[in-house]
Image 1 (cartoon, one colour):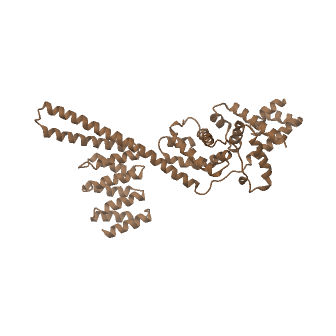
Image 2 (cartoon, one colour; image 1 turned 45 degrees about the vertical axis):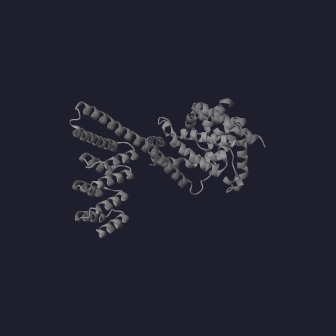
Image 3 (cartoon, rainbow over the protein chains, first blue to last red; image 1 turned 90 degrees about the vertical axis):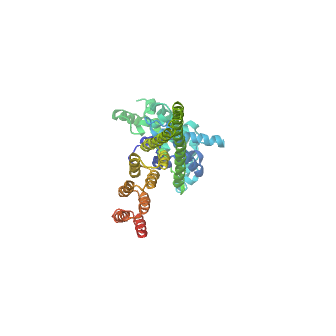
Length: 173
Length: 257
């Protein structure tokens, strides 16, 4: 099972073998949970949303296109879920970081807090790009698929987002 | 290399994606340009901080909770299939009955009710034949719930045709879904007054790897209540690779025989 590609597993789910979703959940639940946590800041909400995202994969399984990668599609559904969540809550914060994540590591806390505050000063688009590329580790190719654009254009946008963050972080006190 | 080019290549440089020659030119410029050198250093630090961000772990029971939801989704999907499957099969049979009934009535009128009885018997036979083919075709493909529905048709037949019995036997030993295998076992059991069917069931026990089905088959075979059934169960449970619970269960069953 470990060696099967995400796309193969999702294609199986698409054909009605729903059990294969457990393997995809195993592979990605933590990543999606952390992604959603960056937006909601609440563990409980993020856990609920993570489960909803994977149930949505089953619901929308017929729209999965096996010639495309699974990961961008997964994040596409996760991003839609964040939007839906905020439409119902109307308090879009898009990126939060609460101390409980870093409480084990006190010496770094202030530095990290500064970083998170700076990220929060960015536009929603830049925050999203930084979260996806740096925290979630998505490749340029995957992000290009997610945003329906080219790798060159995504790379350029990420650079601009990081450049903006760098200026805020190092040039403002 | 100009400062503007440095900015273009910065991400590739940090990702170690620059060709050797371009990388050398990049490093050469940075060495001589304090501004670019500072920017590169800050990008490096930022990258380090971003990649060092801590991640959270879910609370206990999170995965278990999801698997329960997954099971629920599976059941929802299979119910939907079985409902549409049932509708489809019902329509097939209903359409056939209507066609044959219409044909028969037409025939009856033409023949002036001379061979009334013969036609009705032939109509019944045609419907039986149709159900038999529906069972066979559904067992070959379709979803688990559709197969179970098709197996249900078997109970309406007075006698199990050889072809259907073989299809059920194959389903019993090779279907992916244990519920379908159980349904096939029960359908065969229903006709187990036939010697051949009893042999099939005993043979299926030997070919069966799933402990759950093994136990079901032991229960069925024990009901034959004869020496052969006793011998088969005894030989089966004395094999080395049999699940201990199945062994104990089989032992109990033969003690009662």
